[in-house]
Length: 347
Image (tube, rainbow, N blue to C red; front, side, top):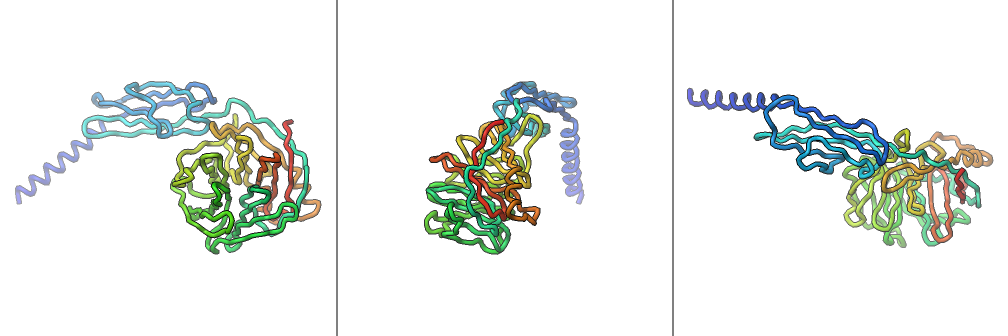
């Protein structure tokens, strides 16, 4: 009995000693709170209490940025615009402690403003709750949303006729889509899942899950990656083979973060993104996240209202498609009875 008591006492004493030892170490992590893209930002680690530590590792957005230094500067252009987590992990005998801070980086220029000109107007299914839109080989491919109404369609541009169609199970809320390597990738909203279809037959070929982003909103691609929005200011880049989210950028102007980015399209190397519930399209640099332009399409809403009453608050601009061969941009909206071909011009 005594031996058990002695062992228990020793264990409690050692636990208390380790706990007291850990609390004797206190640190402070100071950063430049706000910076302009391309400027230097400082990270300063200080030990307030405790014996000398073995080392400290400094990270910005998960990337190690120091060797042995405790006070450093970073070039914000290496990380892009947005709010970046700064972490310091202090190592000392038999233990470590992590503390966090942040640096918020804003664009170094204000976005250019763009007007538009209507080149052509085509019919569009007014029952389509448009989520994704893409041009491919002379046709439009479109996905629609709402549970029980989520469809994938191949559409004739000139007539708006639906030539081919398939649907998701009723439990899924369909979102954006893109065509890559003869396959269609289609997101769902809050199910953290996407589906893969054969481009020619619309036969389902597989599925994938979101691991880092919580929701699926818009989808496009470049030559090597799929590019996904999640309803925040973040845009994710996915490996087309594993469909894992490799990294993200954050969309920022010189004043604020652009939240609720929706449908996406890559046009001439720039990302075009719908705002949710706003008749605007942001033009975003896919490397830095800087919002380089804003296209004001408020006039298209008025144009729609000449012939159709938009009764639902969700009947908003959404859907961007690009015909690269003929340099044509198409836009539409949820439940809009028209598809517009537009040409944009800088003000």
